[in-house]
Structures are given as C-alpha cells and as structure tokens.
Image (tube, rainbow, N blue to C red; front, side, top):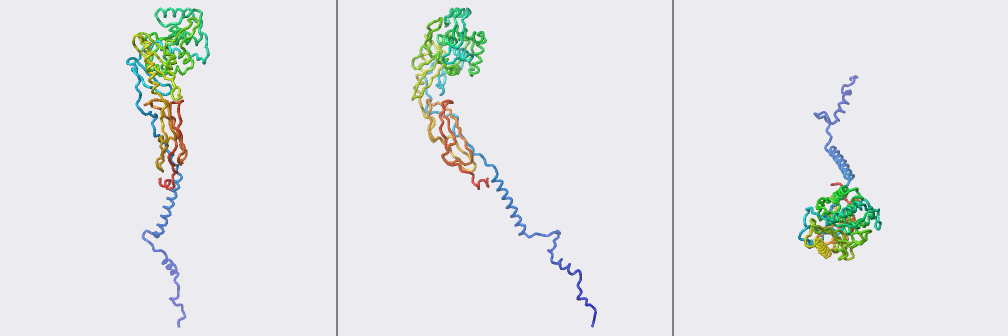
Length: 434
C-alpha cells in the first residue's frame, strides 16, 4: 500500500485561470468586442428620438411670420361713365376744375402767352404774403408821392388802366389791393411794388420766385401789372396760382366786390361783368392787343346740399370785344360743369379692399362694410387711401381691421373695412412641419 500523495489529486494553480478564460467572450481579430445588433439599434432609436424632440422644440420656438396685407385697389377709383365733353374755346387756352375735387382738363397746350392784367393776381399774392391782412383789417398806410402821381400820368397817356391819385394821399393796404384788383390800376401795382420791395425789379424777382415755388414752370413775370407782353404764362400755370389766392379770404372778398369807393378816385367798378350773375364771384380780367381776352374766374354752386366752387382760366380770346369773348367762354364752361357735377357713389358695400395673406392658411378677403359717395362727375379719378392693420396671427370673421378713405384730403369719407371670414391661427402640425 502506498503512503505517498497521488498526483491525480493535486490541483494545478493554473487551472482556475484557464477556466475563467474559457468563460470570456470570444476574441475577434480586431482585438475588441462586438456589441449585439439589438443594442446598437436601441441606441440609434434613442438618438433619433432626441434629435426629433430637439427639432420639434426648435420649430415650436421659431418666430412666426407676420400676416401680410395685400391691397386690392389702385390709388384711385374711377367714377363710372365717360368723361364729359365741355364747350372748350376753339382758340387760345382754357382750363377748368372744381376746387378740392378735381380737374376737367385743359385745351390749348402749354405755350407761354401774354396774360395782361391777370398778372396782378401774383402782385396781390406777394403783398398778402409779405403783409398778411386779417379779414376786415385795413392794414398799414401807403403814402402817394409825386413819383407815384407822375407814374399815373405817364401810364394814362399810354392808355393803360390807371386809378387817379394825388400827392400826399395815402391808401391803406386794403384800399391799395382794391384799387389793384377791382378797377385794375397799373399804377397801383407799381405803388405796391415800391412800398414792398423798394423798386419794381426787386418786386418782380419775388413774383418769379413765387411762381417757381408754386410749380408754374411756364410762367415769367416781366412787370407787376401785365402791361408788358413779356409777362407770359399758361392757363394751367395760372390755375395753380388761382387755387392759392382764392384760399386767402381777403383776396376772395376783394375780387367779389363789383365796385368800391377810393379816397381820391371815388367810385370805381370791376371789369368782371360776370360778377354777381350765375354764381360768379370773381376773380380777375385782363385784355390787350397782345394777350387778347383773358379771365380767371370762380363760380359758387350747390348740388344735393353740397356747396362747391368752379375755378377756371381762359386766355387769348379774340373777337370784336376780346374781354367779352373771354367772359362768354367762362360762362359756357361754368354752365356745362354745373350740369355734370353731382353726388355719385364711388365705393359700394362688399368691395374687396385688401387681402390677408398667411402661409399657414388660405387667403382672407377684407371688404368695405358700407358705401361712400363723393361730389364728382363721370370718369373722375377719385383718390383713395387704405389704412388697415392686423395684430397677431388670428383674426376673427367680420373683424374691422381698418378703413378705406375716399376723396381728396380734407374731404375724405372713411369706410370701415372688415374680414369676410376668420383667419385661423397656425396649427401645431403646421408649426412642426413648416
């Protein structure tokens, strides 16, 4: 019987390490370990999910575009019907308009022509600009000296239109303007020029500067009275001046006077023989061999309870009685205008004035709620101004979002503008998928 240890019962110290090694994942040529496809897929899904959440959050937090307003109308609305045909003169120039409403047009072109005593409108404009008068006020006194008397005598000898004066006499500013515009005193034009600017040349420079400021691009003044044939203008240019001077109540009051009594001259009469007839309220005549018959006129009229003023200018009329020819043309034009002017509908209810545009929904129309009527005539271009605003991205149906202003500035009618249906808010789906 053997008493030694059996070799088969001895444990080899390396046996444990070998067993552990046998439990490890198998090694691959790359030297690493391969994760299972399922783990990788799960991680990819998680990553994609995170990216989707981030993208969605970014989309939701992005600023939203504003609602855009697209006007559906031009800057003017044309009244229905054909433009009226007026009895324009066959020669010379003419233009006619309704103050604050619009123009009926003009004939005769824009070739500058002599305007005779109509030049005194600009003389009065300079005086009233430099020395404003309140309604009813007389203004400062203007002395008549020996030089002014000599001027009156010299001009009378040339058969100019003058107002008698004497040395030592004084005229108030208002009286001098009356003498200038009613009996059309050429000598008074020079008296006013000397009083205002020191001499005629300096005053004429003011006249031309004012003409440029008023956009009278075809006008040149060579003297204060219009006696010089070098004082030239056009009907359309004189209309620009006429609108300005008739806005001055002092000027408008004086030219509406058929007669006036002056300190030395006594009772003098207006050469505007239309004054006081058929609504004529002024303004200034002019006539001589170079200019023919000229007349700037104003006519007051009413229709459907609305008062309006017709303004017109006629130049270069010829005939046996040239001034009367100009007055006759003015009468015919004014009478024709009064048959055309009426209160007419310019805007009807339901007119699409604008459209609301948003990328998340369909277009929404904004229409007028009521009608608007204006004083006018067939074919007149009536100015309009759209003032609409939208706050936010949702607008309920039938919401007033602004107004459509119809007519000239100062005479405008405001028509409410409302949505025809609701403008919906952006949906969650749209926000995420835009």
